[in-house]
Length: 113
Length: 115
Image 1 (tube, rainbow over the protein chains, first blue to last red):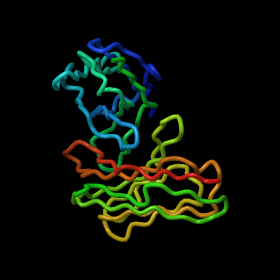
Image 2: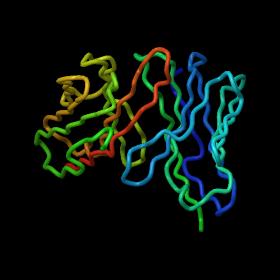
Image 3: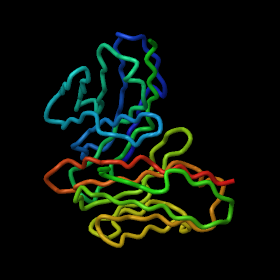
Image 4: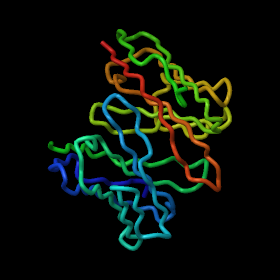
């Protein structure tokens, strides 16, 4: 019930291509779905987030698609660049300060120059 | 001016030793966390404090003891270190309000190597 399943574990994409990372959750009480980006040697940092009242959110080249009925959400990186090479984590939580954020297991993305 | 700072950044020690990692945040956040990231990059929450009060305590060996002297600081003390404790430990903070999103701000991590 508390899991967030993320796939793929690793992803290699050509420069200029579209990178897609998928996540699925079980707990329908989750109401906040962020994506975190982590570069080597750094802590994760919030990239983009969505709430279930919208089906899509776009910020620059990064888009979250959300399917509430399927309990799935995905991150799309358009025109992927070598600088996007990082580990990406999806996560889910309830808007309640006592609730922990559940992270997926991460996707290592490598963009070929 | 670093928002979430943790020290030391690297820690190499022998099995059986006791060590501490310190964390400070200057964001005025109410909630602080410790996460463990293993070699496969899995991020696992260990503890969470809200205004010095322990609110999340995952299944962590009792060799790990967090201490929050005030809401801006959360330290992690580890007794009798074992090989399996080798990991990167991240401190994080969030505003943790009921009305806002639970956005985490992470520190840069402390890499612990137990020999």
